[in-house]
Image (tube, rainbow, N blue to C red):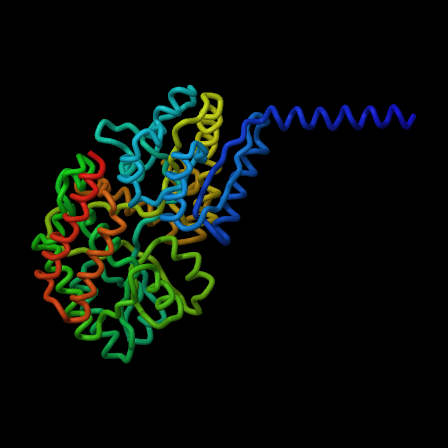
Length: 436
């Protein structure tokens, strides 16, 4: 009996080992820590449980710049991951990495997986497609910028919290009333370049660079010194001087200034909502970004932030088939709805948005649908589809340095934005020379 049991155990172990060996492993490197990292692990587990042929292994590789650099180095060494999460400003860098990536459109077509780019939100997919409409990477965590108000602060100042500023003129008038009523911090922002240059430009249908915001080639040049850009940055500088705008920093420091109740109005990422829900001890609402009402066609549509999934080169056909199946899994409406409602990121397909609406989620969570409505406010144009500049991480830093000089009163807006263009173009030329 013992011999028979031992034989059965050995046979069972051999069967388990055979099944494990039969699975094709898909390495997924990402940059999401904490609660978001748990959500990513949950997606991998759910896919793994849904079929037996492939196993996705999700690995946290540090912040976006770190993981992107590590993946390119791993590719050169012949051991890159199959899938890499890259922030949106890394798009041009990934495109320029010769042979390091395989376009998602090709991966899906070769694997004969159902794939229709028209199923995705136009402003989301537009950011990650080439000029021929081929999807280069797979949209994953996408957000956009929104305008937030503290309803309690409005009431305390004798303002109607249901009458929210729609234009920058109205916002300034409201800011003056809040300040007169004793509100110390009236308005702040997170991500100044992303909100006040990148999204601002799309929202007003003006370019921030030539060549369709860099999408048409590496020889693009910045145009953030246009009369409208100068006027807007000058306005923010004047607001700072008058105590109507409190500068918080270059990343998401503005989130805490709003969620703590310190500031009454705030512009920042839609993904800030989860943190605000946890921390805020006051009533608040989200709204469309303000706009300058004398600009024809405004408001247009906002653009996304966040990241997409890139498929790395040098893998076997069977592995790419697994990658395609995983991306098809991520596109499923139910999976997208779960991701959207669990994280605050945008559902990347129109069907997922519709499914979420029908579920009653937006009725129970007013404002949660604003991201999609703002992104799809109008059909995207060449100015509002997105942007693709080489080494734009550095480009953003230059723009923010120059804006900070205006906020601090050490430079006028025209000089600062001219300097931003000059310095930014130097970065673009270096990138162009390195990738010819």
